[in-house]
Each structure stands twice: as structure tokens, then as C-alpha cells.
Image (cartoon, rainbow, N blue to C red; front, side, top):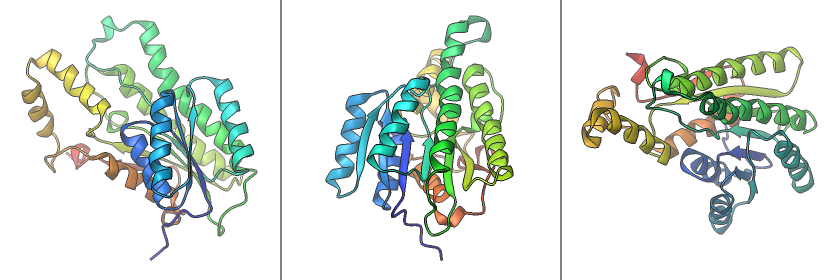
Length: 268
């Protein structure tokens, strides 16, 4: 069995202050990676980094807006000055836009979702490629980029067109980046993760939106559970472990892949 430790690796995680992102930071750090916790929520990113350091691991907070190109330049400078290397990039930051009809959706709202969910992934991938191409490989293993999509990016549905479209774009862009990296001979793998509904603050937004339409939060939750064969929603740490697999040596032959973690929801 391959060693899945991440010693001697440096990783950037966006959206690292809450939910899935915070669990990814904790998971990668506990496996030996030096983690940079990136989030627009400065105080919460600092809190997560402190928790990781208190557990005896290495973490730094970095406040940034993932849709801001200048912020990525500043992050690249920070990574090079602090560590001089980048082996892992997890583009996890994202926002939800659900519960609204297309005809009620303002163009500014559409652009905001795309700026965070799509532009942020593009800018993160571009920055990672530039840094990773200057970073020596650890034990001959390829560097890893993981982009967070969703099962919403694999199937359509009503009342969430902006979010689902953005996550479909992430899935397709991931494949393009994977194939381009391979064609250019870069030491980089690029894969996407597609969670189902997860018990996080963002997951709670889904229930809130369903409640607006259906009138009862408990009924809305039960109705959603019916679509999950395992009869529960994901825990953040389960998604973090999927990311851990994709950035570790055990997945060194995987690139351009979609890892679905959804309790069987889209298998139906």
C-alpha cells in the first residue's frame, strides 16, 4: 500500500475558513503538508490556521478574494517567500446561488457567481501551474491541483442555474487543464471533486432555499434525503478525505478525472 503522507509538500486551499475547506486544511496538515489557509474571511482563516498549529502542524492564513487577479499575484509572492515551492493546490472557494427563477436572476448576481466559482478556479489553476513548474517533485510524484465542483455540475436542475452552470464549467475546465498539462509535459495532475449535499453552512443555505419554496424546513430536508440512496448527507471530513486521495501518491496516475462523493445520488 502506498504511503499517503504529504510530508515535504506545500499546499494552498481556497475557501479554507469554513465547512469543507476548513476540513481539507486540517486533513492535509495532519498528513504532513504545510498548508496556506486562504479565504476572504480573514479572522476565520486565522482561526483555522491557529487550530492547525495548536495541533502541532504547519499552517498560515492568507486573506484574499479569489476573483481578484492581483490577490493571486500577492499569494504567489507569499508562497515563494514563505516556502519556495508549491505541490498542492485545492481550488475550493465557492458560493451558492439557488432558489431563484432564471427570470428573477439579475445579471450582476450571475456575474458574481461566475467570478467566484469559475474565475477563482481559473486564476488558482493558472497561478498553481506557474509555481508548480518551478517546484521540484517529491519522490518523483506529480504535483496536484484539485478543483471543487459539485454533482450540480454533472446534472441539471431547476432554481439553481448560475450555480450549476458554474460548477459544470469547473468540471470541463479541469479536464482542459489536465490535458494541457500532460500535452506540455508539466509535472502536474488536475482533477475535480463532485460532492453531494454536505453538512456545512452552504448546505444549510440549500435547506433555507427549499423552505422558501416548500414551506417546511424538516419536510424539505426529508425530501432531499429521499434522493440519496445512503439516506444521509456527506460530512465535510469525507469530502476532505477524497481531496487527500487526489493530492496524494495513491492517485499519481489520475488526471482529468471526476471524483463523485455523493452517497449514490447521481447513480440513479
